[in-house]
Image (cartoon, rainbow, N blue to C red; front, side, top):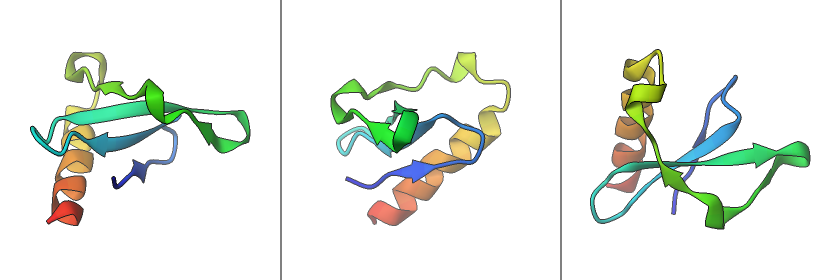
Length: 64
């Protein structure tokens, strides 16, 4: 499982390996991430959808 973090995002991103859907999990204090908290990214909740799509494309490229 590959992860991407972005500055000013308080989460990490990964892909569902079957559907290549983008998922996120929050990053807590001391950079702790609970891997059981991954949830699908809701594109409607982001102002800059192109940045989120870019993250998804980066993960797809890494997984090839």
